[in-house]
Image (cartoon, rainbow, N blue to C red; front, top):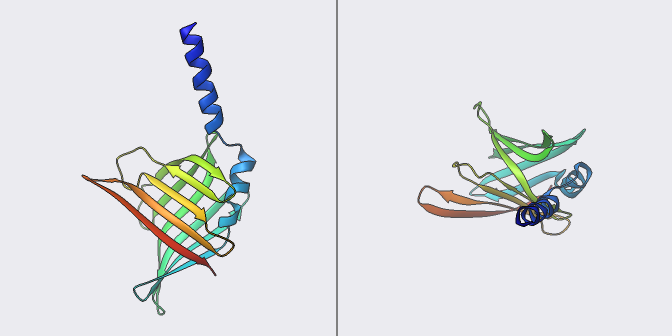
Length: 152
């Protein structure tokens, strides 16, 4: 009986955490845009585009003369689970973040591995702004960075 109760509770928790294919794409569709942030004379760019059943993005820095692509992103369904995949340009390794939660104005992804950041959160701050928060344990320090972007 105790095992049955534990199994029931676990099923309810997992069911509450899972997101259907359509709802994750609908929830994160507001990201589908070009987002800009001015920083120390440079422009940080996050560009997201919906493609079939995924959102694909890239992150870059522009200084008025050159634009350097830094990272590629993808929100996609991988083996039945929604994930955020990040890959630094020029590197083969990818980091895979599982979806923790999503709703119509935010998406939270977690990677319980050792590499920083362990959490990436996108939050809509109105029609023309979004906040990206990256956080986690970096060596012996907890670290959190919040960046505010404006819609292009």
